[in-house]
Length: 337
Ligand code: KG4
Ligand code: ZN
Image (cartoon, rainbow, N blue to C red; front, side):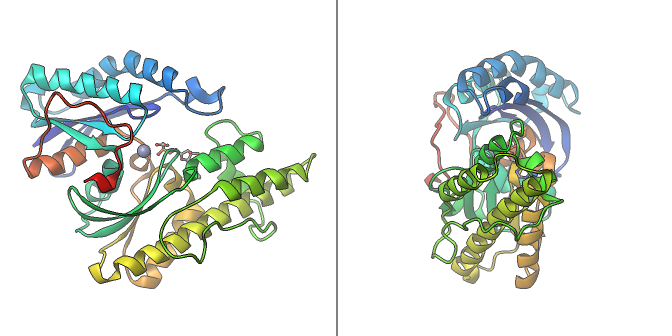
């Protein structure tokens, strides 16, 4: 069984063909980072226009690299939300046209579901498992009970974790998206030097809040008009540690809430999962709980078409598919399942 997956929810135009033996046959991600960098964040109109320019040659290239012709695909899967409305419309309309032309079923995939199910594409993990999706657009904790059955445990009440990394990186003068550069600086820094707040730490539940941390970072930055390299490194290390500690606190609560369900793994996904300090923190916690830790390879943690193809394939197994008449849902949350 082969499924084509198309992803255009934010600033990556991506597609891939995946089979039911968990093999990724063809996989292309075209990032728009350069188009948005001068604005310091994603500009929705630019994103939509860029998807429109890239989608046809990109999907064509993915199909050229697939082991079977388009007519032998079992289904076409596409992200239908959450995300930027204009961008979602482009991917969805394109996928509908392919599904109609090839007379294949169309499967509308929730982007977060794509991130959440990636662990089953990369690892042999059984349901249920805990997953934290932390990216530039999302910060969601949930228990993946089954395909299409997600217990949403918490989300960010303000900014997403990656968004905060990017905003603080911007204050420090790093180009967008700055999470990776911030981590590189943090490697030479002292994580104990500055006492950044750990928002919501110690409080019940699994929601996140990063606004206070962002404000604290701005306030502290103003105290150092001529920041030396060492202060910058200490700043980055301390800030990164605050996020890692917050994630750990929320993960602890999540495990307490779902302990009786016996989660088979702790999963970390989304672009922020690239951060080694954060990975190590959650991994150490998993070891202390005697639960396996899974973080998919970085190229599958960030937005990609393979995760959408895989989520579509998992749904196709259950005979699920969608009408060609549906619109995307930019606010589609996982608890809506
Ligand atoms: O999942 P992703 O590629 O795109 C979406 O936002 O959907 O995530 C990108 C986010 C950006 O905010 C970026 O700064 C952050 O992930 N990021 C990191 C690291 N690498 C990427 N944040 C912290 N440490 C990193 N090493
Ligand atoms: Zn994403």
